[in-house]
Length: 179
Image 1 (tube, helix red, strand yellow):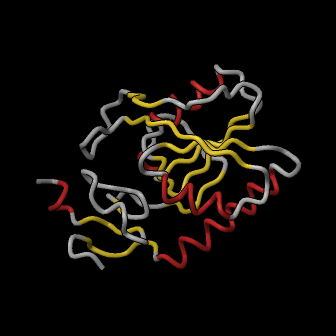
Image 2 (tube, one colour):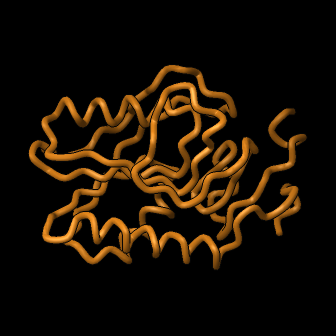
């Protein structure tokens, strides 16, 4: 375990097992359909890779970079889209993939943006769901784990660009992010 963590919240084996189960659910729901998976950079990259490797439906992948956090640990309330999808998504089944639904602000805005582009359908898959932090009602169609309101890192989640490469989800020590 990394020295800056209080504890491991979700170990690697449990995490990857649940992601495979999610892929089975998604594949069942999109049977006989094509799917465009759009990941929110950078945090969703590990989750998106693991998830899409287990999908059994025809899948294309793209990315968008949208955030309401910047370099801090508290949402600014404003969503900044610094990199948009590179394709026409009109008429597509879009699955937005994110690492964690927290306040709901970013996913709400991204989903609205895609709906305005005349997609066939748009759903959300998230690795983690922090329901108690929600400021805007966003209910993921697929979620891995509901977690408490703790600052988590690993498997793509970061604090100031550190800890993304941890193969599990860990709780960051409070003194690290409250400097």
